[in-house]
Image 1 (spheres, rainbow, N blue to C red):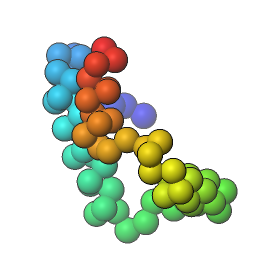
Image 2 (image 1 turned 60 degrees about the vertical axis):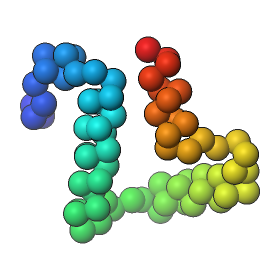
Image 3 (image 1 turned 30 degrees about the vertical axis):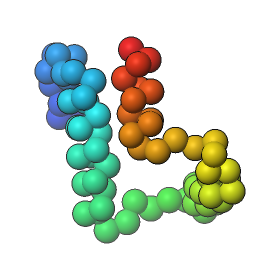
Length: 73
């Protein structure tokens, strides 16, 4: 499978630009009819969601995640 993204252009992108691209890709999945998760994948997603809802103090907001991601570089 060949990549539709030029790797040189990707390497030249800033962290903010890459995060924006990730957002756009993620949001584009909404247009897909169904991703087709296996029962095990769905169960794991539900388990993680239940954990996050039960432990909101241990979770990051999207903005907190982005800020932390930017400082890791």
